[in-house]
Image (cartoon, rainbow, N blue to C red; front, side, top):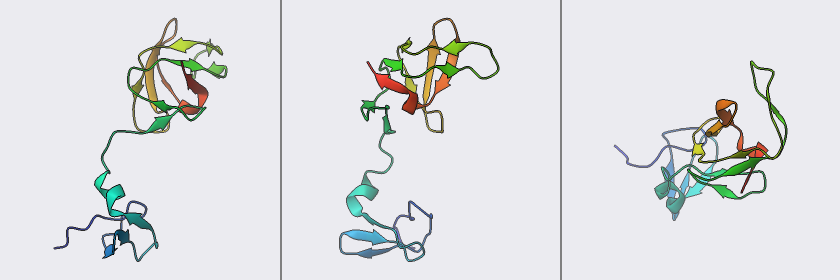
Length: 112
């Protein structure tokens, strides 16, 4: 059995090696062996300005955000401390003073 990685785009098991690249014959995706070796590294999340976010960072909200299921609003400029990065559409878990635990999208925050 081959120990080549599956395609990261279409998850095909029929990848093959061509020099320093892996190639998928089903979707024609090409990627380097180094990129394949770095898979599984930590989650990469960037704020609205393109700054890299890490667990424990502090961020500021850049747009008024309605809280689903409530009449409250998270106002522009609200500072959120000690964020935690998670996978998914809403990629930041945090606690906002006066509102409680929330999930935020990184496109609506900037690093402080």
